[in-house]
Image (cartoon, rainbow, N blue to C red; front, top):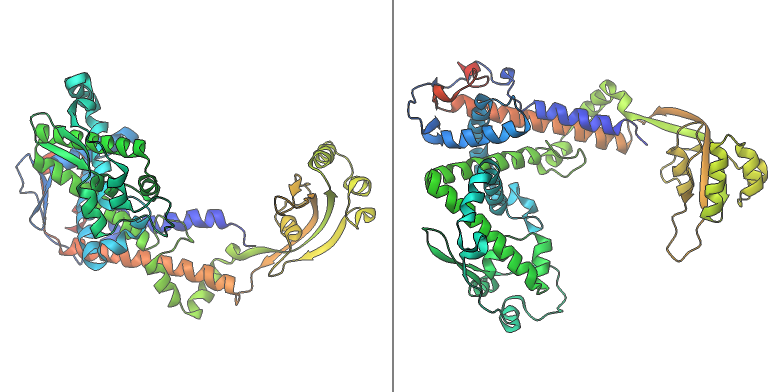
Amino acid sequence: MIRTTGWRRRALTATLTAALSFAPVLVPCSAQAAVAYRLNDPVLAARIDGAPLLAFSVDALWRTARQGDAKASRSAVLEQAVVNRLLAGSARATYGEATLFASQRVAFAHNVMVDDQLVATLRGLYGKELEQAMQRLPGASLAGLVTAQPAITPAMLDVVFGRPGQLRLEYTLDAGQLARAQDVIVLRYQLPQGPAGTITLADVYRRQNVQGRVALFGRQSSHLQQQAMLALAALYVQHWSAQRFGAAAMADLRRVLDEQDTVQALQQLHGIGNDIDAASPVVKQLSAQVSAGEIEQYYRHHREEFRRIEKVKARHIRLLDERTAQTVAGQLSGGADFGALARRYSSAPDSQTGGELGWLQHSGAPDWLAQLAFSQAEGQPSRPIRSPVGPNDKAVWEIVLVDQRVEGYQDPASETVRYVAGNAVAREKAAAQLAALRQRLLGAARIDINRSILDQPLRVLESRS
């Protein structure tokens, strides 16, 4: 049992995240590219290698950030958007969509998540205006946009999903099924001063995570109709926003949000921002390459992370029912003698010795009672713990008291040390690789800035010149 796991995870996460922060030290002065302030067009916030970044997008992200932090800086938001654009382009070229967003088999598809973020951002910024616009719709609701809801028969669903009740390993549609789903119209709509359109079963399916797909395969018509209306609501918000701000502004904001998510996926691929034990292809590869010398060095500098309990001297009281167990626990809380209660109530063979378990040594596979003892603080009786038996098996309740415990350190040659130290070293290497990539991209980029949108001096970009 290794202690301090919780703070170690938090500390390592903070260290790795800091490696990608905006600290100027991460951008060496020897690899600078030109940063100019030649933009005067109020529509533009920046150009990155000639590609525009619109002021609308920067302003939208800044205003959103200020909802959580009143001190959020527009300049910092701009810098983050610039870095994200560079990193996201590199990530897609290097890894591709399937690797970056490997969880899409069970989670929402990446493009759906970006659309939802776009709609949520617009609602957060323009919710009042959207509500007022909706009041002017027929019936003062989104239902006023629906022009038809064709009947969907069970036979139509069978053509797409197959017969009900079939055993399935995955709830997915192949290309042929998707094509047939495209022919199943869930609703028709007419956007204000905009085009008429349809939302099909395929449109709804593409917006689902695994639970949603299970509901569709289960023929849950209420779920289908609800999801179609949610899709219509998203279309309406984007249509209203495009009419007000222009299609180019919507496309750019969506791109910025997409790049933000792509960089987050890139960081997770390098073990940053997820749990220290979470799978990461880059960390896994680097971990296999960590040398014995690196592990030894890490162990020397982080020995306290490998502190463990070597053995405990413990007593216990075994009770046959929970009511008696709670009664005994109450008496212990009141200061009653543990040994006397063990002799009176315990059903274990050692009851007459006061429940003495003696010294329990840390072993590779301790039984559940030993595990319970190893998890207890010294000198404090545990609460009654039910034995881990099946629901129909006779259970007992154990109260454990650790009288003494002896601590030591994991063997530096153990597999536990190899795994923990190797993983930590690999994560630090992965973070360093990503920081180096960031430096190279910034060093090679041509960036023009519109100085008029800045609210404080730039930190990263200014530090390059």
